[in-house]
Image (cartoon, rainbow over all chains, first blue to last red; front, side, top):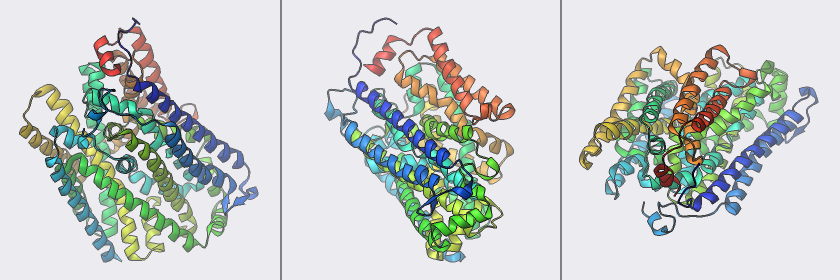
Length: 99
Length: 484
């Protein structure tokens, strides 16, 4: 492709980084869910151990998994996501208001 | 028990309608173009409202009726499956993210088709995606209408047609007069109802069943399969359950009614808060409702129609007033889903087809009348279709979710992030995606053990990339407009 004569909107680099973080969190979420469910759950139900009354696989994969990934989503957003104006012109943050 | 529930229901419906009336006044008062106000609420959503409308739009009758019904028959394995929906909140907003909100403002896009039209500069892309929306949405909305009316019928004892008339009348009414603002505000109210309802129901169920462990032991005694991740008779296979992460986790990014919310929020802070609230809300609701369904087997082991598990359990475990309040939750889930779909349908006809191609410069007063008229007309059409549902609707609805994803996921995502993506790539991807989906649905329903959606999505992606690379790149002006 020919070289382009303009510079990409600088906000896009941050936005792309954030998008990859969301995808990474998604993959991690999947691994946690899969690992606990099919590692602890893959035995005859008669031999299950129980935590707070739930089968251990269910407790770790579903209940703890949900709590952990809500917390991670919180940490991701609060510590790694950047505030930025969304208006058409990246330098003009006032244009962002009232739209 | 009927009358308590009827009173609660009608108070609830009246409240939703009032929100519509109030929103209509706000829309008239607001400055800026009517179209942007009516179909996008003037891009003014804050974090809490964004989270609520995003998740309630996505959470439909499925999560309150069919999902718990499956959990009732399949046990904890189905609760595990439902958790593949946990990422919806952070993934949709994280991936479309600020990028989508910025681009939409640069090009003044109000609908997803606006975005595709500007990005690909192709009539064919617009027409194909508009056809996709018209067909799939008509089916999806009327199936939700039918579900809502059946539910209303079973709770109040009114005949089906009357129930449909009241239920559909309220939804069509508030969407038509209030537009996007009414939709997101009612979504928020409905989200709160769902949340409170779920809390009450979980507490009720576990108290009624005597605690967690006794319930699990009872499930074990009924059928040990119920407490495994594999479901009864290994119905849930590993590749199949894993594919749900694509169908209901990742693919949701491609749904127009979801994606449009990615360009309607006020600020990046609103989006940050929405990710947090939305994830917690979805996680809690999915876990809660499906767990109630699974546990239901131990409390009422002999329910004949699994889909009635939530209403039945509610009536058994809660007192009638509480039951009435809770039973508005599934109705709320349905209403919040149809209302957004109805508005997307109407914006497609009004903005994407009529204003784009038939009358590019209508005056403000005319646009206003047209928007009301088309929204009401779309609602009426769906109402008539649901009154005596024809077979093709049920058939179409089977494809609605997956069909939407095959049409919109890659053109949206690649158009946003890949400079080289062009119209030829998008068109061939849509055609290959939909046709291979139809093929798989009929002849090869679990390719390599995975859900039907996986193979078509992969094919559509490959075709998109290959065809784009083989044809000419998009025009420099387009790239500059989107990236500069």
